[in-house]
Length: 312
Image 1 (cartoon, rainbow, N blue to C red):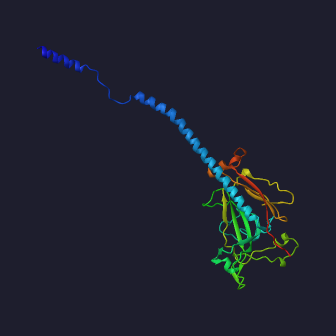
Image 2 (cartoon, rainbow, N blue to C red):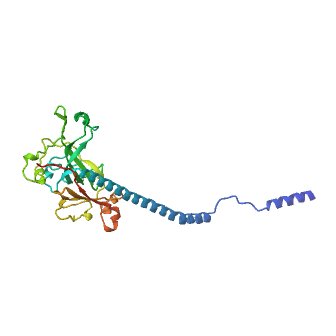
Image 3 (cartoon, rainbow, N blue to C red):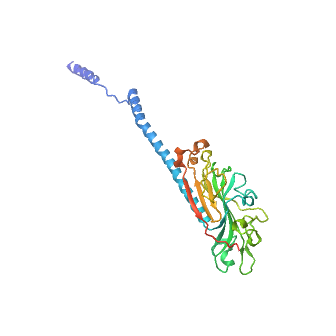
């Protein structure tokens, strides 16, 4: 009897022990944790988004600055070889797009800015149209005259941006085989060698303004030098050219123009990029405004042609 009572009492005591809770968080605990997480994570996300957006903008600025400077350096090296720089539009009817259209320049939205004659140097090891220059010149370097034009191009093209770009066009004279005295490398299609002795006038400007293209159409494409050139309506400029300098074009409507003194073979070249066009798709969002000037890198350089051409 006593043993039975002891067993019953022990069983009751065992059943009266508190039960341990092995469950998860309560609903209130979860709600509190979520609110705390939102309060902490949301500012972090905003901070990260701001950092990434700032980095993207700074990268666009840096890229535009580098490309604009590289383009100016290229133009300067090219223009330093000039023997004559045109300061008006008299030559424009002899080159694309007025003379005939070519790939990359086939509308009124392709405006000539810098047009000049230069000496095009060939190293004796250069290979042109499958011919090694040295084989035609007894192992010597040589040069021919070339006509070069730089354009501001705004026509739509799916390959490039929807703003503006600079293109380069070049045609050159033939290379003569010094041994056979025959043409070793033909001239560019549409090129016409100038003969100053058959022109009127006493100045180089008067003579070279009489140059006309040769028979046949040009087939040399306009090569794109740099993209994302500013051409927004709000950024139209009025060039402040020095005395005796002519603005080319006469009424600039974009981020590429020049002030030219043809007599001294000097050009002041102006370039302006548009980094916002890399970031925005709506034209109104990348128009020039004074408070956005850091997105419009600008480079100006005065370049003197060092080539020489005897007009006698």
